Image 1 (spheres, one colour):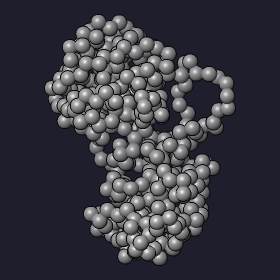
Image 2: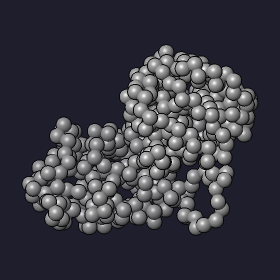
Image 3: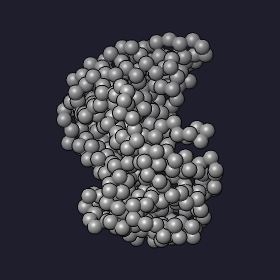
Image 4: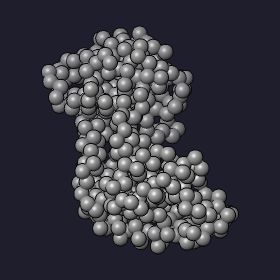
Length: 402
């Protein structure tokens, strides 16, 4: 059964609402370095507060693998959420294989308009096992379930999948927006450019296959390009390659010869061998070199195609983006997109980092009104999900949405 929108849920005053949020944010020394995922859940929480619901928030942080790891406690998330909301959040620390009595007692005694946050769900191994009993215990805390965690909706977890066997499910406000924006890619404006980069070709192949015949251009970069280079017989030296998927890359290259879609590989690349960095033609890489970015000719060529496009979908950096010496391809591609008037959908992770200051986000009730504001882009949507976005675009069924 598909999720209904939150706005279809009526008469929620005083009702207990379980909201599965995306709390998996970067935390360093107990401090959150990027709270954009927290901000994406604010509209839903504020909507529930306005309607005086009893709100139970849950989520995970990192991969504790069923162990209680103090460094992965949701306490920093709870504190930041209080600042963003301007509202007290009651934190329940007890978490066992099955839901502890502390959580049940706290939710039983909560008043309308109160917010309770549960500790990291992955402290129980039963969360990632999609344990029905754990899902039932979570469901026992509330009357309704809301999914506001698009980034984990492609995972069959107890708080995403099993819980919905016991509660009627609804889509949070941001999750509904994710679905609407990504669904638009199925009936795109043309020309459509799909830009694919990053390292994990196995997660990108289904999307590439889905968009053959749908996209006008598929522009490839990052580690994904290396697999295609290897498939056509180019030397890739010490570059990142996934040998397991070379046959898939060859199959795709054969398919595009019979389709209107043009799959375009970098014509030049930036390589490194020890401390030596050079720009080489893609077919002229030596066995000792490693491909780490797209080259200037490719950047210019991709820029020309992006300018022609009326819709652009981008997932994955064009090179080793975290190293300034090899970030030029990714940064200039992002700058070209920001100059475009096309509809733009950008995947999460490193690619999304480049656009976060340009996307409209709900402000904290206590936020200062002063200072310079970034120019917000109505034609730009940055998904909070990386893997979930790819699987959705590839047409796969996501356990958290179906």
